[in-house]
Length: 384
Image (cartoon, rainbow, N blue to C red):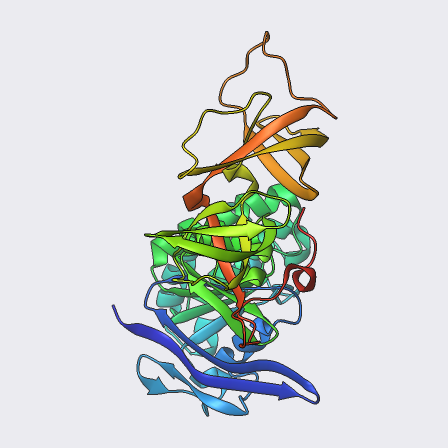
């Protein structure tokens, strides 16, 4: 389908703050693309640059191959939905949705037909005569979407549109937004700090930190194959272990972590002995049992551990264990429930293990080369 919205080397500074730092992005036509990251990472500035509300200090913006960097907002084929929805309080739902077509002086019969179609799409035909103050948060959000879509923009920009909603309503609106996107088929550029929103809605995600893009990929790629320590820690929970590559065996390598026997890891980064690495292991990839498992040591890593925390969550149980001085989080899925099974309890001795393919190596630096590839875990923040 080709690139639809493109950022080429875009930078933006506000005083001493580098909000966006040489960002290059290519967003495909019809794609649901999310900019994800913590507060202050530059994602909203990127959205405002796309909308024309901010001018980049460097770089260009293209839409369908046309350079729109200098175009004012009203000349761009993009519409924006803000967190506040920005509905006109004195207008009815029908008039709010019709506003863009009225300003464009479209024929009345066309306006009536298009508004009726939008009201049907957002399932609010019976609310058309109400004012915004009479609507719930979710209804306001739907009206904002309909008002933005009625002009048939090439790109819809969404700036944390669900942030003001409570959890249950936010979950429902996620499904509705996804259905609307599938129905209208235009490009959505979605800004959020909520990893759950981005993971559930997006075709692809750009994870941002300190004005830079750390990684671009599908939700599965971002979660299963993080490229940096920041991405691994920000997207879901993970365990970090700090070690050094000691030997290579085909596609696998041995990593020495203080206190552990050498751990077998898939060497997807092509690292060599002496390279220092962070290992990222998701809690749900680690198994736990009371008895030592019978496993092939070339494919699995098994360690004795002492249980320090047990948190029952219904569908899963979360364990915090201590293995050779290292704190490790384990998430056990409840596939079956046996009343006669003796549960693993606090202070129990247990064994944990994981497959060699399930630990991702994030290179720290090579000897003689101090360039960091990923942020160390202490800079990212504690994982839960």
